[in-house]
Each structure stands twice: as structure tokens, then as C-alpha cells.
Length: 305
Image (cartoon, helix red, strand yellow):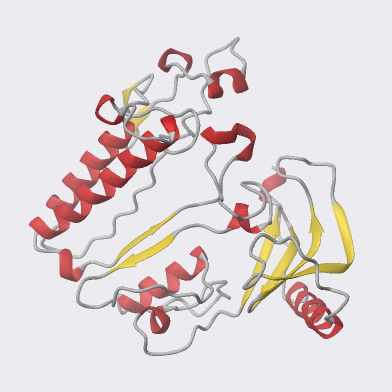
């Protein structure tokens, strides 16, 4: 789909009304294979199933050679639809139905790897792009005890699930170290024995030593950008908010001096500002920000085009 499943609303319809009470006939998003439109409007209740079928077909076609499959579901983004097999299956309503169908999809792909003899030779990563879209309440998902949501720089908007699977290579367990989706590129290239070009600076790290239990986490710092500005920095357990802004609000930016300081290990909900008691950590965070900004080369702002 060349757009989000919510991006092609038929003329004359109110966006929020259609998201909270969606009907298939409200939407006109196309489903494409390469440059050919094969269904328009796409039946949004069957897209998860169709994406899964395409992924299975791709794996079977390429089972005898190395392959890379990037599978990005449009669900569970609003508007929410599940196929008839998963409708009313969950206690969580339509959102839960959609998530249960996504769970089924992952299972089908893993079964396909096993049936085609690729289970023990395939590195699988499951992750997401952002936290819940709180504007749409229970249809937008939940961040549990974390504050904030999609569009903001609190943990609720930035933390995502990350599950790595490689039978016989990765030991089952929970890793509490820090990583970001930017670390996937250098990690996968390392595992595939591919060298990255030397003519640029990468924002990601090879985290394979952490995954395989052979070394320490190379990442200790995370920069929380919003558009072109650094709003927050995390170093180890500590996170400093230099600026905060409500999600999907382009005006109300609050600058914090000193920045808000939180210990995410004991306060993942980001409720207790401990800046006054930790001036040395505040100084360290400011130095990290200054050092980072000195390395940023100004380029054309793609967000303003």
C-alpha cells in the first residue's frame, strides 16, 4: 500500500468519525504489487491475511538461496478491521482482534520457515515503529505504565517491542540493555558478513555481542529527536528532557532548564523529576548534547518540502 490505510478517505467524510466507527466503504486505499494496482479500494479486513500469504510465497520461492524479507503490516493502525475468522475473538475488542490476527500471521511465517528447512538458518526480528496513538483511545493501543504515546518523546511513544529469534543460535531470555531500530542495519550486516561503506557516520551499532552473550552493549546513549530537534537524551538508566511537547501539537513546546531528569530503571512512567539532586548528571547530559550537535551537518530539511 503506497499510503497508510487511513490516508485515502473518500471525499466529504470526517476523519475522526471514520476512524472511531470505520466501515470498509469509507476508504479508497489501493493494494498494489510493484507498480500494478490489484485492488482498489483494498478490503482492509483482509490485508493482514494477504500480506501473510505474499510473505509465505516469497519464502517458498527463495528457500534455496539467501533472502531478506521486510514485512510491514498496516495493522494495528486505525482504522481497525480484522478478518471474519478473528472477529470478536478478543476481550480487548477490535484492537485485540487485530493483534490476535497479527500473532497468527507471525506464527504462519515461522511455520513456513520450519517447513522449508530455513528455521535454523534465519534471523527473525519482530518490532514496531512507535507507541500507541492515544488520540484514538482504546483503538490506538496502550503503553501500559509508560507515559505518552505516538508523536511524543516520552517512553510511551518511543519504546517498542523487540523480539529476536534464531533457533540454536540465540538463547531464550530477556535482555535489559538499550537498543534502537537504527542498530538493525549494522547488526544484520555483521551477521551476513557484509561490510558497511566507510564514507559515512552511522547512527546504529552492531548489537550482536549482546544478543549472543559474547560482549557488552555498544550503545549507552539514545537521542530522542522530534522533527529536527533533540528533545531528550538517555544515558544508561537516566533520561533528560530538554524540551517536551504534547503529541500532535505543533505549538506548545516547553523548554526545561535545568532539563527534567528521570531514572527509567526505577521510574519508567517518568513521573519523578530528580534533577535538583543530581547536578553532575545534568552537566553530563548537557555535554553529550553539545558534543552531538557539533557533529550535525546541516542539510536540506526534507520535512519542510
